[in-house]
Length: 238
Image (cartoon, rainbow, N blue to C red; front, side):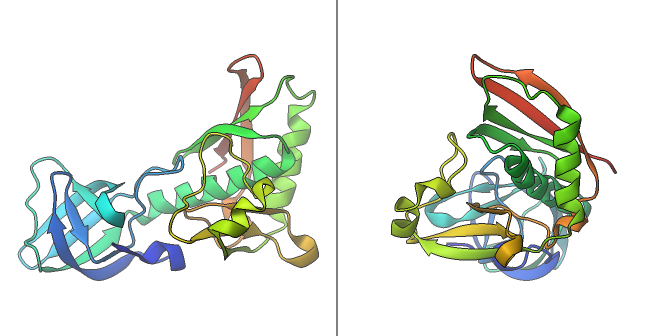
């Protein structure tokens, strides 16, 4: 099982590791800062370096038994099993994904409806809501979202057991993507603290440390995607 360093510190960029396996997908390390594709968030990209070589990593994917597989660019040389390597994220891309991801959590606050799907990108993201009727004032939603961002609320994490989550199903906002369970505990992402808490939901992805890092966002068009389903997109301003 790969140690997920990004889970404890999403701001790690460059970390040494050891190659423990080579698969048809790519390279498995004993520990990694690369997030593997899942939960609507793309896998990280970056570079893997070792004595005498390097490979560009185009994405990271989930492998067997809790492994994270770093997928190299086609035709890349690979390190040997047991080799010491240095992994480095494409940090600018990762940070933009973090900004979008945290902004989407806040979008689910200003639109307090069940979420039926979502996707995170480098420039924009979207959530699909169980929303029979389109909102009357999209600008009011955008203003409320930017007001939450501007409060510069802390983004922290807690852990609860699988049993505690099962006893509190209201924590799960997403109808299509269930939180990762089966490991005995589930990670909760909290935005705000105490009386200033605005959101708490299960999530395995990476987030900014404070909402102020997101910057201003704009809402795109609200698209009808079914009888009761509407897609709401947001875009980073810069």
